[in-house]
Length: 114
Image 1: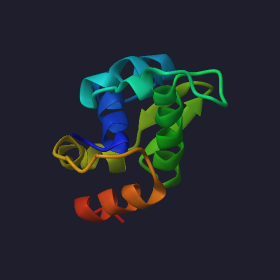
Image 2: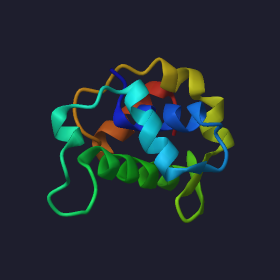
Image 3: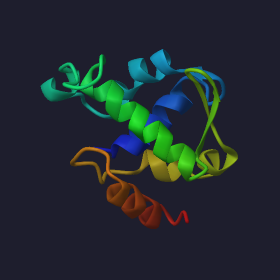
Image 4: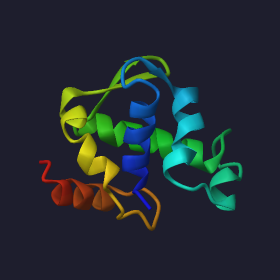
């Protein structure tokens, strides 16, 4: 199973890579990472489902590492850096837990991305 980060990257790719609406990312992320009943539950603090919150956290981290651009409110694109490493994201099978900075850094090291 891919990490949440890889699932979000692949969801963006699936929807065209450029100018993808947040709702479309939500709709596609389950194709790349099975959603558990916990993922589908409402988040206890925010007015959204748990997987939507995880997706947004991943988008922010991807942006911080130069792999995603936040174009406008609710609109995202993959960067050329992410596109250059798509094969690595497609082959990722490190995902066994929720998104964390450490799991993302581990993914980047494994993919050879600094």
